Image 1 (tube, rainbow, N blue to C red):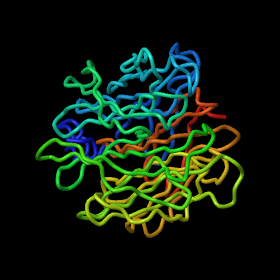
Image 2: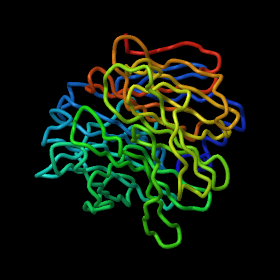
Image 3: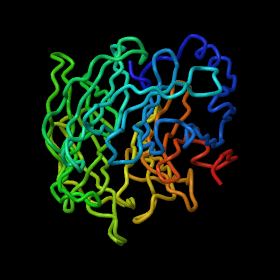
Length: 374
């Protein structure tokens, strides 16, 4: 089962029954309830190249946290690879990153890791066939042993311009829904207006992946992420399209589906600012919704968490996780079996991978902050 739906391990269930406070090891420090902790995972000292972007993480069935990112000399370098690292329960350090996907002739990027209900660990990533991301296609690998070894790569989407960025969700009917997006245009500093979010839906009965309808919006959108709020009802937030020039109209794009993600209504501007940057959106165990985003139209700072307890109608609880002069990009949120909320994001010109741990109490009421970022 995916991390969000698995029952607690016997040891964890025993602790919870007896009301004990859990201490989570994250980068060697203990995170307490009502506290934010941010640890530096990897930086320029790691010999995978200075560039480290976007990072994604999954809690595996054995309790390991498994992190992936793509690295190399730069975003458009030809030597990029997808690297994986693991943090075992009780450990104080992530394992040295190991290359788990590459192409000897092309650039790769945007690794996404996810463990399916049957125990298989999926790695999705993109391979760029030309000079810009609009030439990309999606490939995948599968691990049968908890991300220790991987299958050969196989094509998942052969249509040019298709990319992945965010992890799948498990729908109530057992199907998987993998966020995709089509990136149009040939400008590395802008996306075309035809850029759009969509999904791949994998049938629980046949194992076949099929594309859903697309989310269309006025200036385009990319990198969707969705939550199922009721049977067949999904809400998606998408990064806005366009360029990086200063704007007063930079909003996160929101869309809805009423048929399990097969078709989508139009993408419309939400009330959340967006500086043309990725976001994440998850459903917590108690049914609340969590959105992590850059609360700015022009800068990837601050990095903000917002929580809704009324099904996306309002987000009264908001708090900045990181702020100041640095850039905080491509956040990913994960709630582990112990209820803690983990955020993975990159910073300092996409050279450092960060791991934050918090809970709802900290978002709602504030509390101590322990962070390496100054």
